[in-house]
Length: 177
Image (cartoon, rainbow, N blue to C red; front, side, top):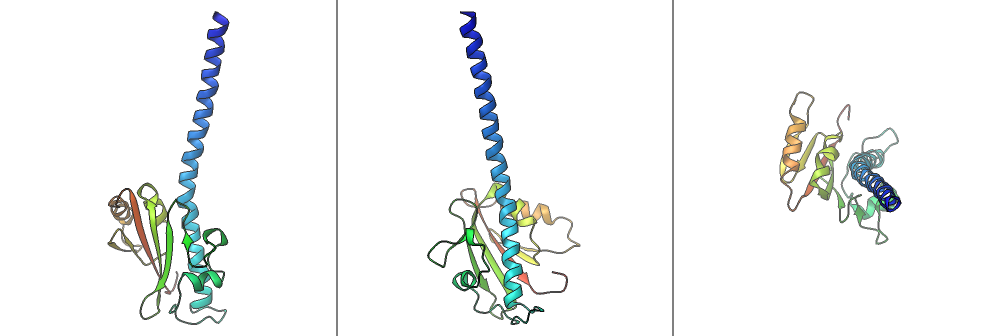
């Protein structure tokens, strides 16, 4: 009888360890999605700027005409983010999408990230080299003198519908960006 109890205790410990590893893996995966998305957003900006921005490579000085299909065809978007329809850019979260566009004057590139879990929103948004962003409809000007940017970003992220957020990044070609 004591052998059975000892076996059950060992089995319980093993199952507990397996559960802990699985939970830690899920947590790490969630955390890495925001970091991955932040890197992808910045990569899209850099590649778009190299082609459309005022670049040393001789790109045009306007983002006019940029959209998902054009960006996918120009290999601006990482291949792992595209669907076979040639127009859809997907984020790392289930159901999340990205829409690329420009301002009417062509000086600003917009990346509109939708269906971001609100729990990952702040980590994603705070890591962007932008001059401006919109989070769930809240406009946030990014400047080195604004000491409460992280708090403003976190507050805006927590207003998402059904625990999902929208982050629209505004990349303008300015010195130092």
